Length: 334
Image 1 (tube, rainbow, N blue to C red):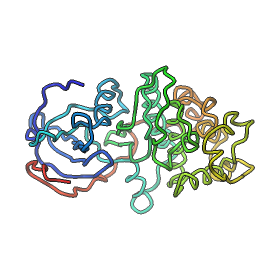
Image 2: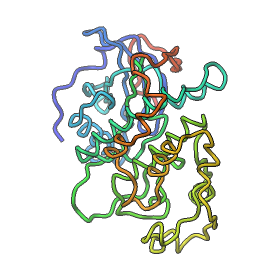
Image 3: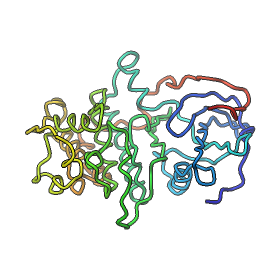
Image 4: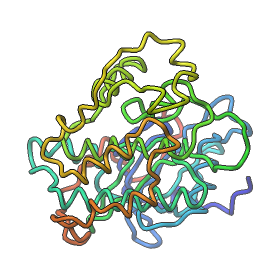
């Protein structure tokens, strides 16, 4: 893929490392031309990458230049570093990710209210619906990939595992989604999954925001399935006709649970709230609710109503600098 003429990393100042992820180190910085505070993600170069540029970064760049939405992180540009193989993606800076923010709510802040959770969920569903309408499947929706700014806006980020959906019958990799947010069809080895795997992750996030902890916290793929089955019951042919044919069903000795216990886990959730959660956590992905249809669910129009975005609480930044540099010289960084 051809890239436009790139600016230099030396066009940015006040650099501070704020985190490290699977696909690169992230810095907060100031664009010296526009004076805007941005986030820079250093591209992690692999020894075996074709032409030296990671496919995950090329995919993320292509997709984020294609889709623009207020609830999807905005990619500004790619800039080059001091070395020939140094590149950085430049994004809008958001002072929080929801994973870090939720972790502080048990010690420093009160939990999100129902109206705040509804507002955040509607923003997430809007982002997912827009991506799916533009034939993009994210494949790694999790709380730490949801950023939150000082205007109460949620931003879906990290499209490194995403891909464009086409009508081909080509199998897709099952090595997607963080374990706690991974759809059961992926856990069981389905390689012809759909964009509905994102909706399973969205359901996990709704449960996590309500109870202030991850919904299913497995230690392995088998343990993850066990945690899911314990809450939702073990799938049956009636609930999921294709279930017996999945590779994992034949491979694993799967635990047997008879009942859906979701209502016991969320006793204060309204019947409509429980319904939308169950529809997102439906085993049969062909029957799992879409993001577009989820936005039309009556739960969101019930009292308490979703809080206006601009009225959601703001918080001190959850990102603390790890290292601070006045000028970028990271060519020797591992």
